[in-house]
Image (tube, rainbow, N blue to C red; front, top):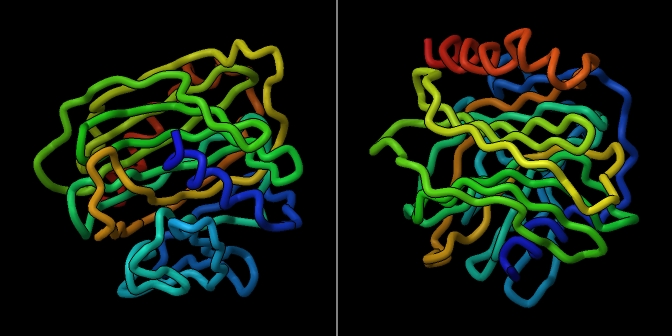
Length: 248
């Protein structure tokens, strides 16, 4: 799947020194990435890479045409955080399509440039598809995909939770109500190790190239508890509460 490969491969073009924070959250208003804490990386249709500073305007992170290093022929762009790394992690972003309806919103976990590996959760806003993919050795494979009923308007919260070899993608509406939750186990026998996190945008299945995405907030945290305990202790409920709090 070339689009997913490009979206994942951009992570591995860089040598990034990850930090050891146990959690972070950016609302892009009062909490912002510091100098060098995060970058944007763009891939064009020819596979060329452009690296730039995050474009933050009016309290929103902007990914898409017109942002730093992002040309009209670009295939994907990602915001990568290089001060947070973890293995059992939860990564979430409040996203809103600002361009055509065919964008693919993506969140990454356990990204590693040496092994060209990452787990990705994404939602195709054109086809209404929620998916989880695994990249290894530069090759991307969708482990799961399902069709979901997206609301007609308003932002969405997309979350990827990775606990050992269990991957969960969660999609909430702007009121924190559950749209879909899908879980799958990585049965490859080579579960990915600790790595970086990020959020990105790529062409959807019917993408036109006029892509844009705004990110209202981004959060990542290490999960110290065993997976089942974390989920039963209200992990999904916490995600919903965060979404409602940001909505307010």
